[in-house]
Amino acid sequence: MMNIEKYPNKVEAAVWGQFTSKMEGMVTNLTLSRENQASFEEYLSNYPIANPGIDLTTTILTTGFCPSYKFFDLNIPAEMVEDWVGKRRQ
Image (cartoon, rainbow, N blue to C red; front, side):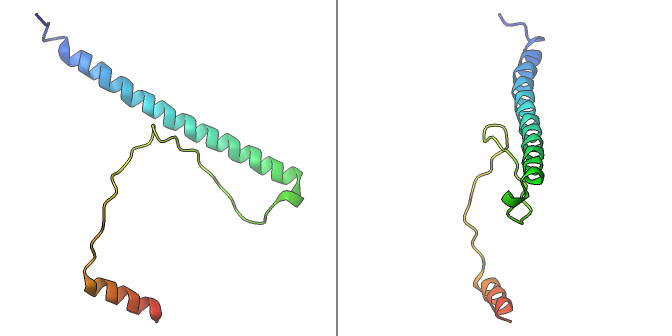
C-alpha cells in the first residue's frame, strides 16, 4: 500500500529535478556564450587585421535545455497577402 501523503512530494521532487537541470543548462549556455564572446573580442583587439568590420554576437543554445515549439503552417487570407505585397511594391 502506498503512503498517499508522500506521493505529491515524490512527484514534485521528480518534476523539480528536471526543471532545475534544464535551468542549470540554460545558465551554463549563457555563461559559456559570454565567455566565448569576451574571448573573441579580446582576440580581435589583439589582432585588428582579423576584424571583419561587422558586429558579431553569438549565443550558445543547447537544444535539450531550451523550450521547443511546434511548427505550423500559417494560412493568411488572400486579401492580407495582396495588401502586404502591394505595400512592399510602393
